[in-house]
Length: 343
Image (cartoon, rainbow, N blue to C red; front, top):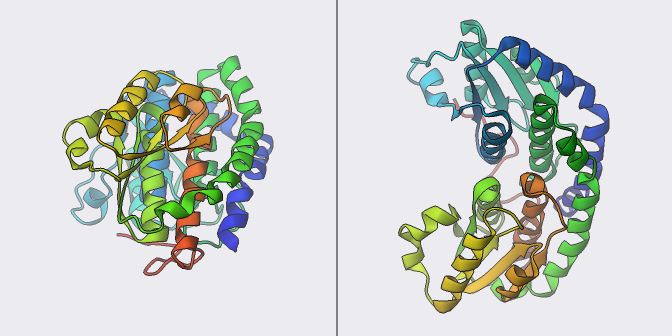
């Protein structure tokens, strides 16, 4: 089963990135400083768009740069691209073959922007369009559902942030990331013992906040892809503004709640969900938070800014186990292809 193998490869992929891409990322960071961007624009689709959302939080928090998400349709369908000349434009794609994202890079470069492609293939159209390329070094990913390429994209965004910030503590945090990833993979093996309980669920929500808003969206996407369910990822703050009304007894909700600035709000939400008799599943490294869940998925003591790299892994494993319980083909979900080319 390719998906299981690719999930398990994630710690080795992170090690490879830290060892082999440090110098390239440091050089790109120097080019960004020399350019002096007014803002950063991120262009991506699907899973890569969730990686871009993580980068939006990182760059905003540690580099104090305004962040925007690109509108690729303005480049490919309307032929009315915005002026990106004063920004750094980063295109993110596993395959590097997302034509609309590539077009954003091409237009931005023609306007004078500094362009960077983050892909798994150095010879891909996006990689050859941008001025700079960061290879995520994940190796071939056979399974349709992206797992190791996603955490590799997150790791690259974290490495670029640390390089631009010239922050020694951030660099020290990154050095320990492979250990945290392996710990999480080991802990996630326990999910198979209880996940069959949710074999017949028809609705499912995943909630995070801050850095882990992206994690909620990505876990929700993995469950959609592998289990063919109607699932939604929410920000904890947005969830309180209406969607919480749908919660009925037995409704399964997964909370992504590592220790950090969002903890008090996630803890409060867990209590409100339990009052509504929801089935609360918790991904956390906080004992009190884990105790709020019917089932808990333990994380290591990882800094909050890096927690999305590890907190998504229990969600990947949960989605895979659900697909197996339902008899689905996990490596080739119906109706999906590995490369989706949108224009």
